[in-house]
Each structure stands twice: as C-alpha cells, then as structure tokens.
Length: 216
Image 1 (cartoon, rainbow, N blue to C red):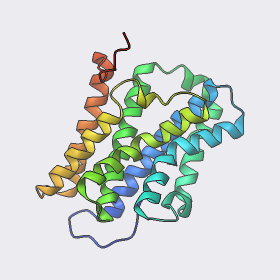
Image 2 (image 1 turned 90 degrees about the horizontal axis):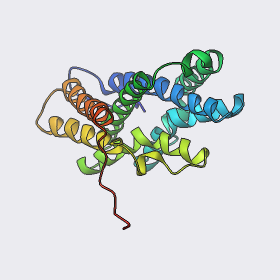
Image 3 (image 1 turned 135 degrees about the vertical axis):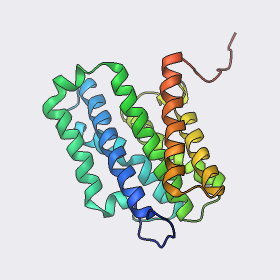
Image 4 (image 1 turned 120 degrees about the vertical axis):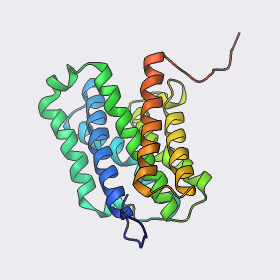
C-alpha cells in the first residue's frame, strides 16, 4: 500500500502504488464477494470476504516489511473501495454470476498482476533484498485468495491448481530485474504486469499446471 517517501524518477512511487492498489482492491473485492454469494453467506459474510480478499495480501506484506499499521487500515480509501466492490456484487449478484468464467479469470489475472507489482515495488521502497521483494510481491497477489479459501474451509487453490502464484513470482521478478537494469519505474512495472497477466491467462487457456508428486 502507498507510503510517503522520497523518490527520483518520472513517476512518484506513491502514485504508482495507489493506482495499482486501488484497481486491484476493487477487482479482488468483487471476486471475494462473488465467492461469498456462491457459498450462500449473508451480507456481513459478503463484506468480510470482500475485504479479506481485497486487502489481506497487502496487510500481510506490510506487517512483514514493518510498515505498520498497514496502509489498508490507516487509509480509509482502501476499506471504502473494498466495501464498494462487495456491495456492487450484493446488489448486482445475478448479473455478476451470469458473467462467463473466462472474463472473470481475465479480471482476476489483472488484479493478481497489479497486486504483485505493487507488492514488489513497495518492498523495494523499504529496502528489501530483490529476492525477498519478489516473494512479497507474490504474497501480496495471492494472500487474499488464500484467506478466502481458509474462510470457506477449502485447501487454498493456489497450492494445488493452476499457474497462479508462479505467475505472480515471474511478473515481480521481471519488474525487479528491469529496475536493476535502470528501466524507468512505470515501464518496468508494465513489463512485469504483462508477464504475470499473460502467463496466468495462457496457463488457464492451455491448462498448464505445476508438476504434482505421483502417489502411485
């Protein structure tokens, strides 16, 4: 989540983080609330799940890097954005549930990519080692989904299906590598976003999965 820090470059990191965070927050709030509708939760459950999916990964990241209290709990805009996304689903759930799976997956991939870039970028601002910044970018992207699955008493999907966390790791790694090569901040973030987004979408389209341990 965004912080006020000095930066030399064409785009201030606060602006980059805020745009990525708010966009990802809205997308993931809608996704979390949709999962709540499918699980037949009430309005409170829908709001809680929307908030958790939208902001859980960022809160985990902020706690790990020492940015406390987490920005999601200090800046009211994050909570309002998350609850707005959840309420959109509450009032328009029939329309949302009729949206085909592929467009929803594309939106999810966009949110994952935004959060992965924002998470890695903020980790770099807090002088984390690049390898740790890659991990924190992935945590930011997948943390909310893991919380969602735990709340719904499911094995987290990210741990056993699809190229999801791997896409976040790859995108964050590309962004940080580009930064190390002195590529401009926005350009490096766009490159990382594209890698994460395309890897996620193509992996679903082509049914790619990481190898599993054979039990036979």
